[in-house]
Length: 123
Image 1 (cartoon, rainbow, N blue to C red):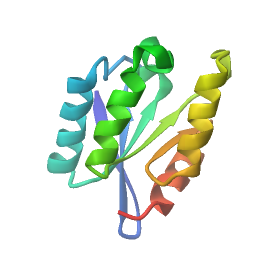
Image 2: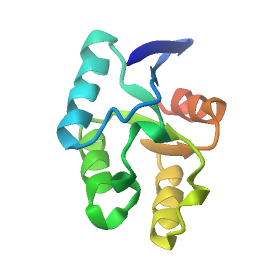
Image 3: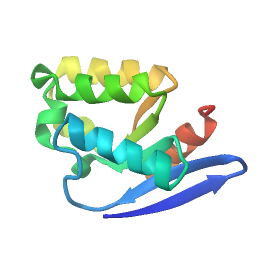
Image 4: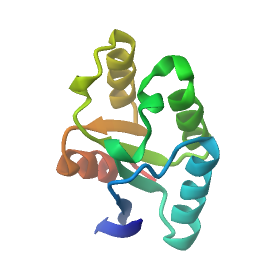
């Protein structure tokens, strides 16, 4: 796992570079958030869809809700990049839509879109 920083003006985004699942449970999510905040002095993170297990995208497991609630509680912004069309779930599509209407969690089709959303989101 490698983390790089994308900086635009005063806005810093930690970009996780890994093809592997990095967050498999809530504790992994908290550990990664703490690392990004304290080691990189950053409150924004960009992940790939592949960094999260398939259970994350099955809303009935409640994994997505639990992880995103923790990130929201700590005012930590997150963008997930991927092709979410492979999930044929109306509830997931609605969930993604609602997240994208806010200012804390974003689901994006491209790295550029994710970085743009995160950099526009105030710290």
